[in-house]
Length: 242
Image (cartoon, rainbow, N blue to C red; front, top):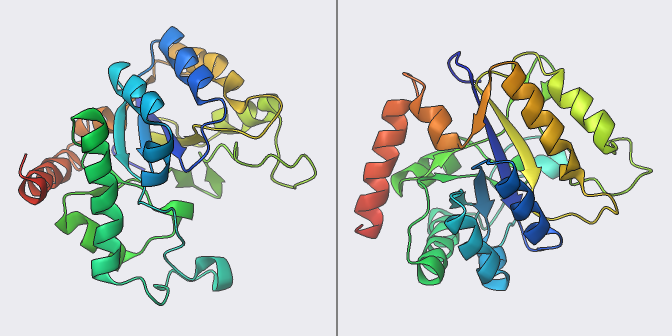
């Protein structure tokens, strides 16, 4: 959680699929919401038109690595130990290739932030990324609750599956929404798109006087995180020369 304040960041991860992304972008446009998108190199390569449209719509884009590979042993043993082969040169290339493709695709640089695939990260990975000007951005967890929407769960028989109404209720029950970061995804395999909860979610947030927006807006409103974001921007410029 970040410093107290009447803001919340809405974020979307893009891994490979673009199923429904155009409709989601249209919904965000109608809702006048600028969000933060974390994109893989694979997503940018396969959906260049959608990426350019997202940028035109005012969304900011962070790095989600090139291949969305597992980085730690968490899936095996619930420990965030680096997997064999996840070395500093390999990891830096995962971020650099994605950044370079984004620049070739849009003519713009990414925001100075990244999100680890599957939430697999540790101090070493965060340090390697920060050297290149990327501040790690997770989603919010507090008191056993999470602002992970679980929209990525498409199997209705899974214990994690929630229909849109249940998803909305759970998100709004989060212990402290101010300063929070919500995780959703740019694509879906569900018959009912999970982002149909967004209009009601945004309406309720605004009624509670909590302003939804980008991660950058959230960080810049925080006395604690504003200097770290500024330092990440400087390191990012030093890395990419712009």
